Image (spheres, rainbow, N blue to C red):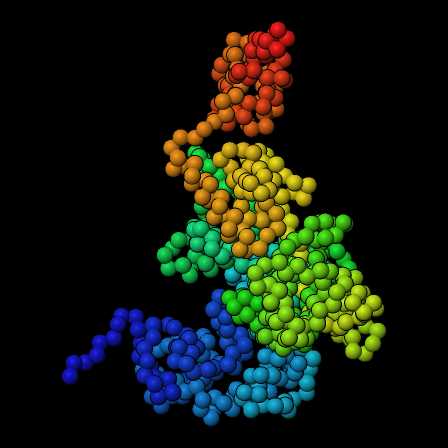
Length: 591
């Protein structure tokens, strides 16, 4: 029988009677977990170097006649050793450690769960009132990964604490949230200077990732790095992503490049920006916990989101009652007078998902339900059968001020129920705001560059609302999606298909018809004042700095005559409408 040969750099060891191999130097904790064996720990995180401070991951290592207890998170795998993860010595030691941690942090959920799994229900030692287990993960990640070094240990023994320098705020803190993310007990929270919870993107939904695909269906579907959020560009530290990338595709030294591409047609699809409900202080967004926008709830409910699709409040519990408030920022003369179209059906969808996932009571506050699409009214009737409470009337205020005992610890929605003609106070656990859809940021510059008109609401204006809904007054420029106005996904897809077909038709045609009436510049009379360049609404006029004269592009000129009327030296004339031709027509009419 041929003797089995080991791969270079690997070791053979035995874990609970299971023979396995591992790379030399791999921590025993990784080897044990790779075999599906659970070992508790409160101080281990893959981003930082382990040093076994909580000691819950203790195992027994046997080599020959020698037996000893070691912390598996920082003990390397060695050739020929046997590891026991559940021996009497190991379990006895873990129970003692669990009792000590339970005495220090009796109200910390993670400590209680580990202690209970080890058969420890109550500690024999005097109870303290601490939240921090002194694992040091926040200190190490801030120093070794982030590179900021804001947090540190202070004092020794029972008085040891994690704090900042002199216990105050630090200018070196970049609000990255790394310390809160690695904290195993949730003791570190992100709050503003007044002590209130910050936006849901940082607290409920977790810190924003600095690297990721910009949005679903992005083309190309590759991750990008946000320099404003990336820790490396703030402190020069981190670099975890480049270490994890097997293809070595991440280069933090890469610089932005600008590429000019000549195209024959353009489809503008700048999308929308959700209305910021912080401007409507009566709803408590950013001030009250568990008040979120529709898109934040969409992220929370998503299966690939931070909670795995579970609908949870900021304390990690499922809500027992949820309020959905329509038309936040829309159909409002103080903000946006237009209807955002998607709010009603989006609220109905959320009501169904909340009822299906949590069984919570759902209160839907609406002005009018606009269920205009195919199957939409039927969906509304289905929700009536599911027991959703529909309340007709704009919600006036969301507060945490309790008058009755049932309102304590709740969010209270004050509203007028116009169906029964009374004012109501409804206590709920969570509030979702159906915010208005507004024009995307930067549409002003896009409109100037592409010579697009905008409606009074700020959205791009189409050439004709019925006969040319995707075309614009500028030939070759088309619009699609919510940049033209608030619309649902099916409408956006249909309009995008129409805009793409219109853009392709210009390319496959080979030749395009242009306006027969265009303007031309007489270079002998042009003084180079460039007044026409600034007045042309189609940017069809360019200035030749060498010749000091302006010229007109016949392909983009529409013959409006603005430049001809404004030219102080009369160097520009409109073809077929020059002075001689107009005077000849007048003489012919008069004759």
